[in-house]
Length: 83
Image 1 (tube, rainbow, N blue to C red):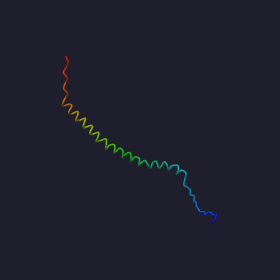
Image 2: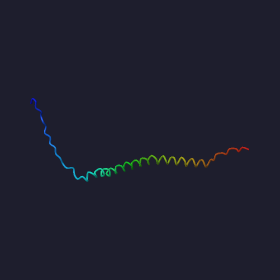
Image 3: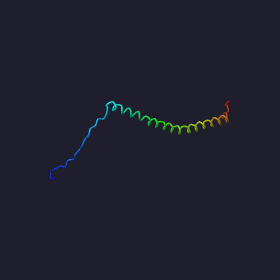
Image 4: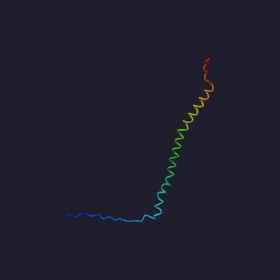
């Protein structure tokens, strides 16, 4: 095969994509379809934040309640008045 080039055969087929209106709404449908996943992540984040914040808030509230309870039972002594 001196001086010759071997060619390959390529077959190309074209098909129509569909109506132009459906291509316009495809991104909108995709965005609306992903809202479920977004809301799922937001709900998971809120549950996680609540699982951390509620025990911390309860501990803070209990600490303040104990401080108020014992602060009222033992009032601070008064300083002597200067004459």
